[in-house]
Amino acid sequence: MAHSFPFSLVTPERTLLRCEATMVVLRTGGGDIAFMAGHAPFIGNIEPCIVMVTTEDGRTERAAVHAGFVHVANSVVRVLADIAERPDEIDVERARIALVNAEQTLVHSNDASAEAALRRAHVRLELAGSHGAAIK
Image (cartoon, rainbow, N blue to C red; front, side, top):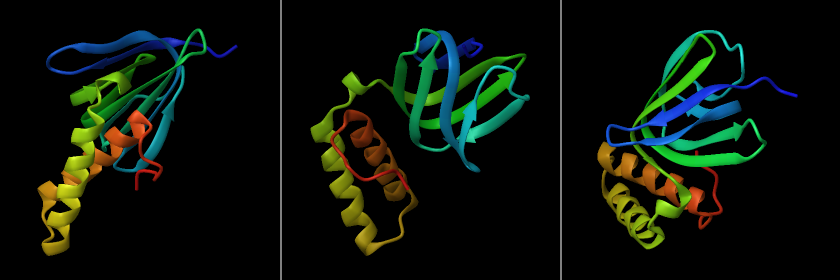
């Protein structure tokens, strides 16, 4: 049986998830990374992604995180996010509209805010189960 560790996912407005976890997987600027009990101290920026948390009882919790950072110290993993959403909080139609709008903007310019909006829409749709493409 895998060892567990305290995990929390918090935003300025709320604590989205606090549990004992056996593994946390997310995406940093250096790529995907998995944290397990005893991981070396770490701090890093989080890219827009789905954070997957395997809980002590074997469930998998998922949340969309659009910006923030991860901090690991003393066998505790903390995700501090500007925005984080559960699957049931995703407005699929709104995310689809944002995706189309961002794609149209990017056809005509190399707009950084449109690129960020595109990544957020992809993550939201993937989490909601309404988008087949993997996040790039």
